[in-house]
Length: 446
Image 1 (tube, rainbow, N blue to C red):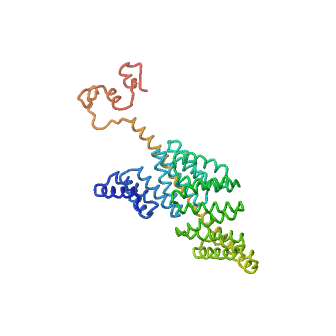
Image 2 (cartoon, rainbow, N blue to C red):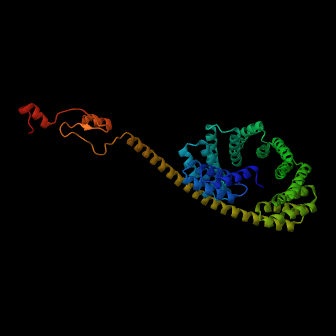
Image 3 (cartoon, rainbow, N blue to C red):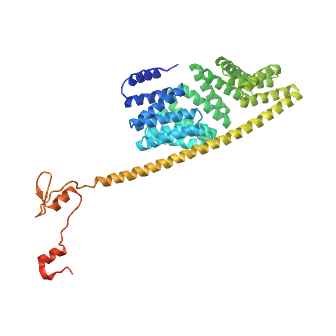
């Protein structure tokens, strides 16, 4: 459903289209392109391209940069990383010429997301840190800074630099708790819970998961609630509290079924099946694990298929059915091998994309530096020309005394006229011919 903002922008755009093309039209096109980006990427791209074309014709560099940034984000979300980076570099070049700190920070954020989605976490961190630095320099709002802290923390968490991740999460936590941003706080609490789980601080992990769960239940976020319940269930398993784990997983499964999230259903079926196996409820375990396995096969979700096959192998081992346990173990090993091969191919493809991305980035940087050099030379030339005064046109001069008549009709000495109309300065001397005329035989030209 269109938001109120989108409806207002669409009405404004309709009015502006009926009149002559103007900067307000370009601004509104960009605003609407950004507003519909996550709802209708195709429409967003059409609007952004129109805005970019008009901005170029009307010489509106700021709006042109905004268009490029939106196009970069669209390509990022579509998985076209090289194209996304190309648009980002075009936008960055303009923002640098305009010395626009906020714009540059925004582009660094988009570039960071592109690298993060490609698995280049170190490069993502580099751009996230640059974005944060620029936002701090231009006194950005606390919420914008908190998002930078959160993204940097998530990158460090992925790299298992857990103490660093925790410090950045805490910066974001302080800001969002003061502002009362509940939905984003729930997401943050969930991430902090996972971080403490990795650190082995299970009680702290449980506390943060419960904070996230309370917000998500209160706000009616069913998918978020199901996810956090799943995290709590896994945590209770580590505490060897199977009954509490089962309660969490069962509630999570009900929510995933309610919203039709089959991936969540498949994974949670495997989790509950694993708990039933531990409790000796083997027939119930087999029914649920088989259900999860069928869904994963239909959806072609290899990660969750492997998850369910592991649970199924453990189940048949618990039943004492060694033949079926062996068959499932072979299936599991085959899927693991396939998964490994696919990941290897994905890695090769990813490296190729990264190569193309960095190549375009370097080409764009060379182009930018050439433009900077050209701009510098043009500035020097303009400065030089500003100091040059030219004498042009017909210049009336007396045939006898050599005085010059100026534009106002006054006669003046030629050296005075030239000094006024140029940067030339005069000093006086006597030429050899005049020396002979003035001082006679004492001087000669020989």
